[in-house]
Image (cartoon, rainbow, N blue to C red; front, side, top):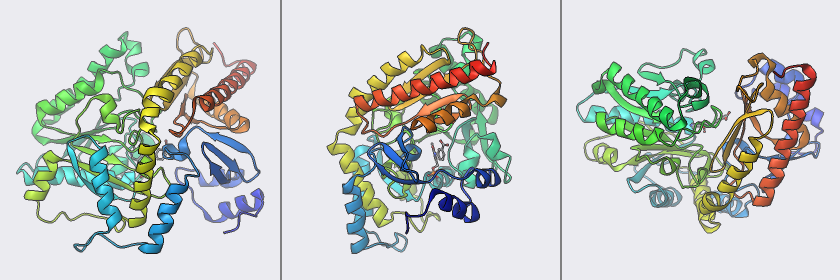
Length: 462
Ligand code: PXG
């Protein structure tokens, strides 16, 4: 593979052949992709040699940072020894067995079993089939409905996108599939602040939307509730502290399974191994992907709590579901090296005790910026809401795409920060240091200043 082509040559070949995910194909072909050629620690370099601080960890996944030789060596060793074998016909490979064992160690105590997939989306397809199968086996086949939230992201397969609450996705391809319902998200700024509720009051209100929906459907028809501990792709929506414990209480009351989608929140992101531990829930299923291998190779899966595992194992017979790459030995070997590194570097503690609180402190100071209406963090995830009028919290009209204006400055200044509507979000690698947080926050502040200057010039401010 040549890295010696010019940026223009890469862009031409890209436009000629590569259909990118979630992309306006024609628009990108006209503009040309940004070509990323190498990375180290928390930094990327593009094909013009421009250096960027990657405050998004690739795509919420490179938890241990780039350039970790232990993961490279684990992949090379496993590829030499046994690059592939399946787990279908009563076979297994040592890395898959060992990873299952290690996941049972790092996951909350109710999890002793795992079903592997190749991605988070496939993991959530497994969730749908497994939850419905569980109720079938218990003689309650009418328990089919899975409740999720608007503005949730659970992947891009038919089931994953159906569970997700992205209207743009539902508008294409005949989604959602039957038996998926959505309630409103626990987004205080939009749904609680305007009602004059405190965050904690709103958390209870939002959780009770779940109870109302369960009662409207009939509890005997509800299989499960699924949610991300903190919504990632939806814009780092950190729920009030009261939300998840109340959701847990409601799920317990009606016997509804609780599914924690840990694809982003898992493996240290929130300052605990899994986001459910930060939020205080005891899920029955946990979807994971991304941080399990720090994105070095694809791997996902579902941790299955004992309540369900006992039924699926003891009474289940054959579960007619699985993927060629369920338990891929190279992916599992890399995951083992990755989890080993998270442990030996103490990254979960590093987020919990050191850089998570430090990021929160820095975000309190960013909250003072005239463009910022709200600033929040959870572990190493952060969001800044850009507003037109700091006093009233009035929003910019969406057509101004203020987030994209800010994002443009970020790229030019050497920072990868995502824009989700008016929310500017970060989720840097967990190896980030305090000094690097200072560097990141200085870049963020500079980009906010540049965006503010643009907005002033254009007369967009209140
Ligand atoms: N669940 C959650 C919570 C996710 O964030 C998936 C499932 C699907 O995982 P796979 O591996 O199938 O992509 C995700 C993925 C974004 C963005 O724009 C987020 C994701 C994927 C692509 C874009 O923030 N998360």
